[in-house]
Length: 110
Length: 115
Image 1 (cartoon, each protein chain N blue to C red):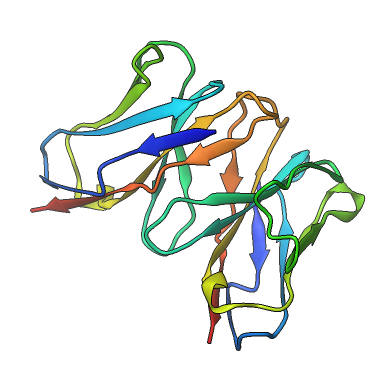
Image 2 (cartoon, one colour):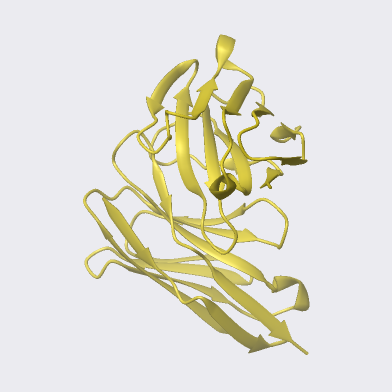
């Protein structure tokens, strides 16, 4: 099985940088996803890591350490529209099945 | 490219009633997923289809939930009879291949309230 842990809530200031952590325990690993979900909307894909290291995509970056079962999502130059829930999902080796964490609700304040 | 379509967007029913949700995936996507998302939690996989075959339904409460994907395109998820704890958003997602690296694209979801 898989177990995923993320902080429940975080608050940050507009223009700042925030790091959202995700730790996982899994019996089989084949990639880690980050999704953004605004209130009342569907999750949208942000990033995918399968190898150790940092993946950068504009203001968002994602890091993975497979040996530590750890990932983080880094958001730079925060904007008010970044207020949302950020979901960490681990893909197992069983036919692409992903297990989601409960999400981190980020509030960006002026 | 059109996204994943779901209907209805909202549904309110009383416990013990039946309800059905419909999903139309992105054209060409072989894999289709149904998730249940309870308020404050992450999505939980209910069932995964590859074309019209079931790949994983280990977390589907089969005494009351059923799903089908006829012809490997559209899918319906049914709850019969509904319980109070079924109140949640039901998300449909699709992906192109179903391998371990492809990305899932989600529909807008159906928000179910069971009274």
